[in-house]
Structure formats: C-alpha cells, structure tokens
Image (cartoon, rainbow, N blue to C red; front, side, top):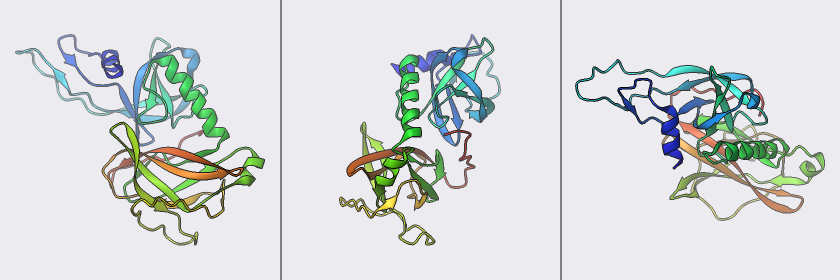
Length: 260
C-alpha cells in the first residue's frame, strides 16, 4: 500500500524507536505527501518555505527514556522541473536526490514516483494551457476568494463563457460530491452571497474567461476540498476542477507562489 511505503520511507531517527508518521510537508497552506525519491535532474529552483509537521507518534521499548516531543520545522521547498508548485514540490537531500511531495487530494496519485511525476507534468500542462480553473491553494472557511477560468489560446478564450455558479465539493466514500453552491454576484462590486444548497440547474450567463471573479467559501471543517465549475468552450460544456485546502479560521495562510 502507498501509506505503508510512505511510512517506511520516513523511518525513525532513533534506532530504538518505531515511528509511524507519514512523510509530509505543508506548503501554501496545503498538505503534500511524499511518494519517494527522485533524481537531482528533476529538482529545480527554490520556491519557498514549507513546514514539516512534528512526528511524535513514536513507540519506544519499555524502560527507554523518551526524548522531548518534536516541534514543527521549517524547510526549504524546491520546484520539480515541469511541475506547478501548487501540485508538487521537492525536498532536496544531502545526497543530491530529493523527496517528491504530491498535493493531497490533488489530481495525481500518491506514487509510485514515475507515475506521479508523469501525472504532475501532464496536469501542469493542462493547468497552464487550459481550459483550467485557478483557485488559491488554501483559504479560511467563509473567506471570499477569487477564481479564474484560464485558457491560453486566444481563439478558444474568446469562445468560452461561464455562469455565476461554482460547486464546493468533498470526497465522500471515494467519490466527489457537491456540498454547496457558490455564486459570483452579478454586480462585481457587491459581496458574494453565502453559499447555498446545491441546485441541479447550471446557469450559463456569458461571463468571459480570463477575468477573476469572487465567491464566498462555506463555513466547513478544515480539510481538503475542490471547486467545480461548468464552462462552455467552443459550444461544448467542460467541467473544470480546482483543489483547495480549507483552513480553520484564524490560521495563518500563504496563498501565493512563484509560477503557477
């Protein structure tokens, strides 16, 4: 299983102890999980600072003195070549290799490394070229955020329209399900309304792609979610999705990154 592999990769710094923590890092306010190691050729420039959570889920043999509990630690996060930092990052090691970290509940699988890398690069191309839905990697529950429908090709962008509605989803029993319907106000200067119940009707009003529009997140428990939106491109309906981590109210966020 992937989780077992991740635990084995982390190991334990104390040979007398047995650790059961999964390798992870928080970056841009979102959790990333390690899937294994990749070569130096895949590691790019520094993109920011992440946080490695404390690993205190350690079992010591009877009679063994326990050290002080670990604290979260800051770590330098690097780009993976050809991968948007919002989807995957690297944690370089002293031997020249690096831990490959993949966004939790993102579009790509948590391993093996070759499969994860191929997916991350494919999804990055789709993110950049579009049609794609761009949302902040993380935000607080109830916060107003900006969404953008991105399409690089100008001809396609001119043909793309969308409505006021976006859907706030969470994975339930292995399937993504819509929990709330969010609306962008018709008047751009107005505050977005509170999310409401899901309506089966999708309203396409002709809002252009490429322009940011505001919606209000629902007040929900912290965790991994995604936003879904229907867009008409060249007369054909396309559903676009953007992962987002909802933080508890009052938790500090870093919502921007170099690159996509």
